[in-house]
Length: 223
Ligand SMILES: Cc1cc2nc3c(=O)[nH]c(=O)nc-3n(C[C@H](O)[C@H](O)[C@H](O)COP(=O)(O)O)c2cc1C
Image: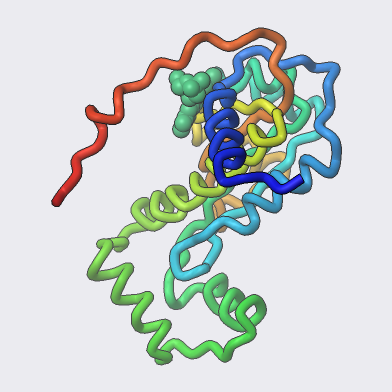
């Protein structure tokens, strides 16, 4: 059967209305592998500045690690207790024109020669240093972290389209989580920092009504 544009619009809207930061998950329900793979693909195919993909994702399956994380992840306890899949998104540190990551992306992923003097490299440098003032380790990390949130939104929307629930999580102490993960050899803190966590699974309760500002409140049309 051919789906019309109207069908597609309805499907998208239903998914966005259905998506809800889920607080209680059914721990007996598992996301089918094929669905998880599509969610991950939505993250992998997400756009990034200059295409440099400053991210990496940890899928935490180890029950002891999940238990340990609760101590410094107050906003994740519900997800750690019941989700089928629990993700920690990492943002890459110090992604600059001189970094080995940019060289790797250009040479190994884009299949192009890398040179510090190439126009593309110089343009990237100018963008970081002049246009966006990315001149400190913290601003570089935050810039990378912002981009990981595009993957977050794409994962949550894809999950919602597949009737899978999710909860985005910033409710944790970053330093404590990073220290813990580095001790467990899950994280090299010279290369990555923790950006957010994401629980994925199935809700146990129906959702409260969504409360949002109106379109008029959030949109200004510049004619
Ligand atoms: C960046 C971000 C961080 C969040 N952190 C948490 C969290 O730590 N724990 C939690 O239960 N919900 C968290 N939420 C969920 C929000 O509270 C929720 O999205 C918001 O209240 C709107 O509700 P809705 O998503 O159900 O429409 C977070 C949401 C975002 C976007």
